[in-house]
Amino acid sequence: MDIKELVPQKLKEQFNEIDFEVSEYLDELTIKLPKEQIVKVCQFLKDDADLEFFLCQDISAIDWARRKNRFTVVYHIYSFKNNFRLRLKADVDESDCSIDTVSSVWQGANWQERETYDMYGINFNNHPDLRRMYMPEDFEYHPLRKDFPLMGIPESIPLPKK
Amino acid sequence: MGLESLLKGEGFITTTVDAIAGWARKSSVWPMPMGISCCAIEMMASGDPKYDIARFGSEVMRFTPRQCDLMIVAGTVTYKMAPVVKKIYDQMPDPKWVIAMGACTATGGIYRTYSVVQGIDQFLPVDLYVAGCPPRPDNLLNALIQIQDKIGRTKVSDFKNSKLPDLNVIQNN
Image (cartoon, each protein chain N blue to C red):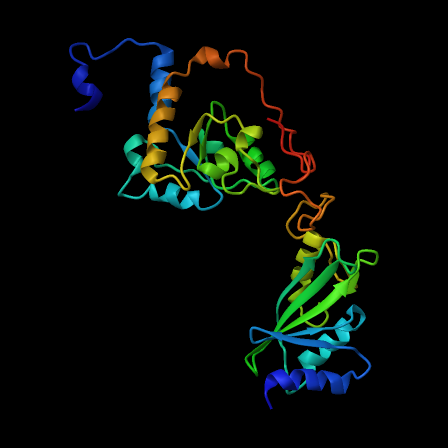
């Protein structure tokens, strides 16, 4: 069976209570799921003998600015066994700006989640070390949010005196 | 050959301290290679045999600020990097000079964004700006020749009333 059909079918068999939105664009498979289920689903995708998504390539987010669920967290995972790349998406609202960490599934997700936290201010629950990745630790803003001005907020990062 | 050929007769010359100190300083400028990004590649190229910064007495790139008197800031200085650059600058002994090499260092360059300092003259006293993205090695050598002129004009009296720098400028280590 084609891997593109196998992944959604396996997920639906395993988690029939979860509402998956499967879409395909430019030959790439995307699966959208509720954020509460992300750890369970990721663990299954990694552990299942036919799928074996061993590599978490990237975790990032999208800020939709005025949409109801303001953020979408995006996971790119890769299966060496099938030579197949899968995209997972989960919506996060601004009022409860958090999602469970998948760093228990993939160790490499640790820093990628830190980066996402730094840039978008999305909290990753149960993360072992949720510090900022790029910006100074006492920085108060999240630069990749749409309401952050491109040139930054004056005086928000101190420069040394001349 | 060289100075000796001019020393005829008794073999001594008279000069001023300013002149001889300025001549000595400008003939052996020891740069601090503050190579932060791609400009550093061109700075390294200026040290290779083709361009040969040694012709101007500056081949001793020292990797400790204690032995340098010219800081070549080559590359994009981010806000996070700025305290580090300043800390290294503070460790250099006086008298010292700064070359801002490349568009990023001088103005922020193509990085017109929140994370990049829009010109290092906001926190460093820059003596010379080098244009280019990145500048070619010959451009850096031109800058070196120009800063040698400036160094040669330095007088002892310039430092007469100068204060010791305040070393507690860096708050967030």
